[in-house]
Length: 163
Image 1: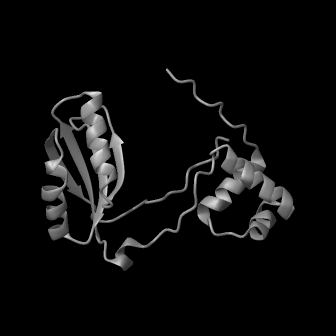
Image 2: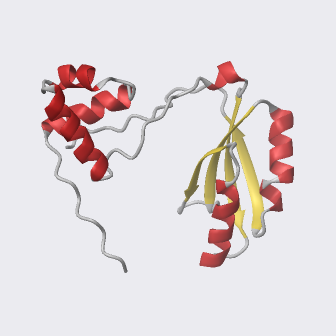
Image 3: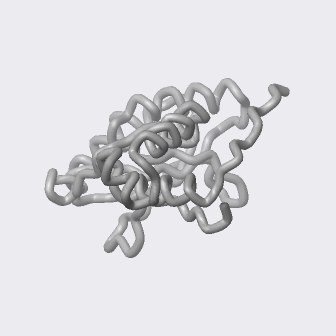
């Protein structure tokens, strides 16, 4: 088994930097430095160190799904016919190629092997996605879908109070 990299040691300033960047990844270094109480050069070094340690793995722009016509969110439970590393690897490779899939989790403790979160324009597109992509993946033996009626919490911000 491969040895995992040591866990980075993060202090209160690192936590404040991470919290600020999670809320607004587009902050300038000057704005970030002011929010966390550092000089711009010290702040830049801290952010660079967080990136070098792979604590910060990227910055994204969040898009309102409804404003771009993606009003249907589905949670799909997938059952596989065999539980082999090859079967799982093949499924995961195919799912990674589907831009509709926002999240894919290998799970335990229920009848499903995978949970997918997908976003689509409407039910017609969902049916096409299911029939032309998901059910055509070798090894998929069962599919159960649930549809989101209203999003109560949908965030990318991680809780960092334990740091």
